[in-house]
Image (tube, rainbow, N blue to C red; front, side, top):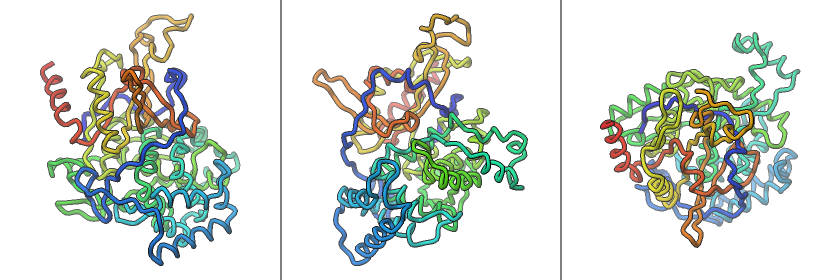
Amino acid sequence: MVQQVSSINYARKTNNVALQNNPKNVTNDIKAQKSPYEKGSLLPYNLANMVSIRTQLETSDEFQMYSTICSVLQNSFEGKISPVDNVLITDKLDTLLKNGKLLSSASNDGSTTLKNLYDIVTSKRCCSLDGAKIAAQVIDALYNPTIITQNFGDIPDDIKNKILSNDDIAQSIKANPDLMNVEGSGTCVAASVEFHMANKHPAEFARWISGLTSDKQEVTQKVRLEALSKNLLDAVTYLNIFEAKQKAFNFDYSTLSLKPDAGAYIRAQVQDKHWDKGERTIVDVLMQSTLMQLGSQESYDSLTDIRGGKFSTNPQGLVETEKTFIESIVENNEKMSIRYQKVDDNQNLVGWECDFAKIQKHIIDTLNTGEDVIIGYVLTNETSGKTKKASYVNTPDNAPNKIINGHEITIVGYKTDKDGKITFVCNDTDDDKSKFVEYNADFLIPKIHHAAYPVSIIEDDMALIEAQQMAA
């Protein structure tokens, strides 16, 4: 469900030192959860039957596809050993088979992860990209989704000169080539959704990459209109407002064409040849661009990390409304975003819409259904530690509750200690760590500005909050 636009863009890396609270890196596996799709079905998690986990190849087609993928990887320098951790890609592929991710058919069209990897290594890839390398990067991400990052990486000067000589490059970039030097990227929302797909929907993740790296350079997404709103007219309005490219439409669903911007393929080719550890892979570039395009009404430029669109005047990142729309499309299930914090016109945090215990319940109830929760949090001058500096001067811009930044992270699980205290297990695509981290609930919850949930989890509470806001 699309909510009122937030004035805060969730874009840049916050001062992560401030969001420490001594977080503990954790490598323990998060319990496997049920999928939101049934094979060949457009039903969301709460309506579909549980998908059985398959861990063994059964048909001759499956054996043939698996053998072909292994052969391509073993005979390719690009796909043999992962540059992320120096592990054989075929060993990772075997792990994906054993944990059920490889034979998952929980995708928009019912295709398995295996089938999509097979298509990647046997069909021509666009832009002279190497199918073995693409498949290896998909396997890396599914094996350990925490490697997904929003760190752009640099463009070498000789490549920049070639880019600038292209007649299709925007005049603003030609006039100021430094716009391509992206350091604090604005793709945290897109990267968080990408992580969520790799973490929870491996077949869908592989399907998207198969489509985005194909000659068509697109992925087709069949979306139930009820995933956008129970009101048909509202659902159609949302598709039009977001300028979604529709290939087909009826009163049950819309088939969308999802594509990255043209600059994404330039970035992908740069990363193909000049990737450094800790930077975005080809897969990250194309996934994040596609999601940024979807959220920003097709206005995103991967070369500069700048967006336009009607929902925000801030040139970077995505706002809450756009995030919710993306999540609903990806999940094929209606999401409702709750904005927990009260923020005044001067961007000061002045209160909360409900008590912290209720926020904790919303998160835990969602995690218990097997879903992740992507949250937008903010830091104020006080919570960032700025007011503690010796040189601090209390002015309107430096007021303790002045919001200075926002960021998106994903809560993937939780732990309860012997005293009943909750610790959330989280992933951050901008913390330079390929591990989960933990934050005490008491520390994290007051910083949460918004989060989106399945409607069934928070519909009643959302109605109460909206009523209270109207009364105020």
